[in-house]
Length: 285
Length: 256
Image 1 (cartoon, chains in turn yellow, blue):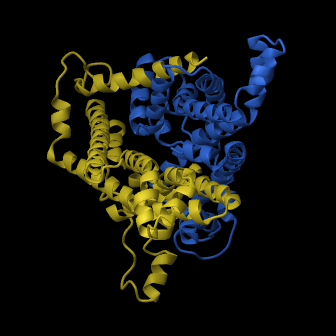
Image 2 (tube, helix red, strand yellow; image 1 turned 90 degrees about the horizontal axis):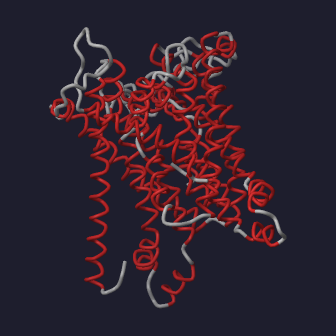
């Protein structure tokens, strides 16, 4: 019964991925040649070009924006998840989770677009900030990296909160009580009992947020202008505007490679950390 | 915590309010007016894009449910060595940057050259949604357990009878939720549509995106709000159906 879906995914998901890899080694065809890509001679030229200074810079900015966005989401999201899981009566928990998901599932495009109204230099927020003297001039963060950063944190906050919440909600509260009964203070209990038990959720949230943020196209397109470029726009521009499918494909392959690399690195780091803690404390994390 | 919820809902509230801004400049509040709603409804290009979006979303949702339900039931009922890599593939499909999958589909559809615009869009949107439906149905099937199916078998029902009369009806809330979510995700999609669309079959979000780039007027905000309400209805019902079955856990597990 699982076969039809597998066939569907193979034909329309896995096969296309192979085409991207193949195209990334092709070249732009001459003026009279048919088709979007010449595949007679395959080379690494596109990768060399994708690593050139201008493009490499965009990759750097993307990793920084996604990384900082992920950290900010975790710093804001963990307390929220903790409050919902530990301090809200069960009846209200599902309602809050529901309220958290509804905006996330509604159109990404529109919620991002709305920030243009909020952040507009001649808009209400800008006027209010000037009137109370916080700003001496109109708010000028639209079409910069700062607006993209805000958009990323806004859009992916629920992606961070939910996995952490799920992990925290599953914790058997008697473990926390036991820790307190045995004389550990609230801070020690949090660090040695709650946090380790919530670690899988936190890890899931970090990974998911980072991947989604690094591959985003909508936020930098709408809020970033020309100054807030990310890899997502860069790839789309190469393919849709410059008609350079081979270069766009190479960048897409590099994006996937980079994300996979970060994932492996984080997993390794976690593994080493766990081993170290085991050595130091003689107990599993 | 209230501040966080305000933050999450602020843009939605703002866009709804500003769609009633009668002024020529969307950003500067002048007066209450439904003027732009009139303009928005009177726009043939927007309406034809809306029609493309609805047709795509319906076909996509039918594909997603017909493949996803069986995959989900199999994942819960026929566990084996195959489940781990299969789930792995599902998470790759859900986690891969949409942009990458969109480029691959554009290349592949162009090479095949046999699909029209709506078909390309529907297939493109369905890949993610088959995975979503599979996970929702799997969660429901695991939550219910197998006792009713065993009872049917003990009472002499053949496997296919038990499947049609017991398993499928029990999955109904999950199927309905999956159908609604697939419809909404397709209806809201930007990236896949941007790449796989053909000239003449732009979807509604793509129309809004190009209108935004051309310069913002109130009619875009009005269109946006109408779109928001349509998808909000589907989402609220779907989230309620899922939450009723498995409480917050299933909802949390489905994000992404």
